[in-house]
Length: 351
Ligand code: PHE
Image (cartoon, rainbow, N blue to C red; front, top):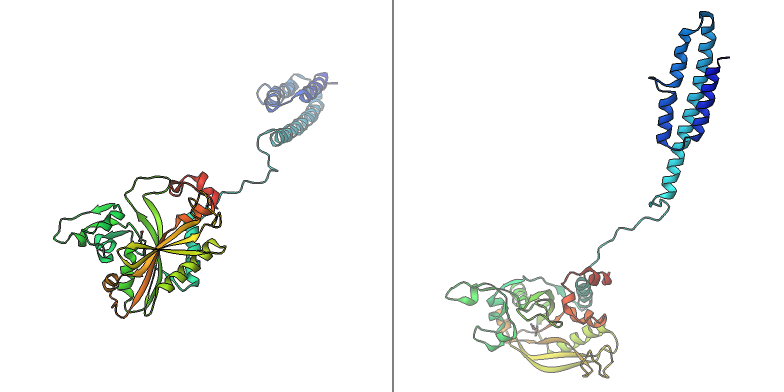
């Protein structure tokens, strides 16, 4: 009975099992189920050519075939969709079972870490942190520190000038990038006078120098200043000894040599026993057994007076040292230019 319908259903289902992808499925759908020209629709149309009494039975049979074919289509469509998803999950480059990639976090710069360690060491000895400006006047950087314009000690610091106004008093107006942190001494003294002072002054310094593995035109210094009554050279040496011991560990043997700075009298240079060879002599200490740690001295009476303190009543000590040096020794960094070259391959090693 209605052989055409039976053949249609058999063919449709047989072809559907051979359908392997979405494209073939769509072609199959157009062939059999499309409203315009689809095989099933065409078969239903033949209804009108049948004798009237046969039409209901034919119509019912056609509807049954339609239901079977449509259900088979829906099942195939779902199976193909599931297969496509499975193929994408297993076959593509994305493996959703892999652990996620951790976002890369920044960290403190090696110099910031060094500064924080130094603050901690000096805080234990009662030193506060005092911030002074990077751009200074000629007066603060030199004049008030007992280095007048004609003084040969100016040759010790090659200077980046910011402006140089032609005024009757060039020392007052000329602006520069500080060549050391010592101008901060005058600033704290003028602010705190006549209170006793115990501060460290960290900051970037600038020198117009040939750049090399040993010298950059930007680097950090830390200055120390103590002013009060009865402050003596032995207080300075004791402070430096404690500092070197905490920073470098070991025996922390300290050696003091006479030196010269215009703003201290007497002036000294302090060395600590070489942390690498323990005094035996190596390439790092240039076979002397000692490492230079700081320039220092008793605050010069002229400088005390410039800060507002009467040198007959008050005395003080000051010291200054480079902040990069300790970490260069600790990590065997032989080139200071790495510090501010912003190469993450270098900086990333100190997270
Ligand atoms: N300001 C000196 C320098 O650059 C160091 C120093 C500071 C010396 C304080 C004595 C006292 O090089």
